[in-house]
Image (cartoon, rainbow, N blue to C red; front, side, top):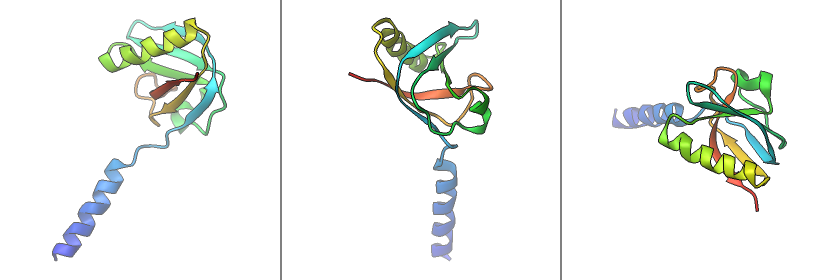
Length: 113
């Protein structure tokens, strides 16, 4: 009985822990940053991208950060610094379009040297 409970708990944890399909974008430059009134900052990225989640498939080169949160403000700082210095960045997405309904949310930004 205990073994069955442990197996069920492990399977449930795996289902909960697995994120939606997150995409990645390799080294590329940022263009067209736009700030919206709700704190969303949308931008285009010129890097090669793996398949975006279905919610963001219509805008495959577009990403978004939420500048209304502390975490989003940190991402925005990195983003705008890279934009101002014309540095390329790489992106790992969250697999969701939680900030802007048709654009994948940024999980991690990496400034390339």
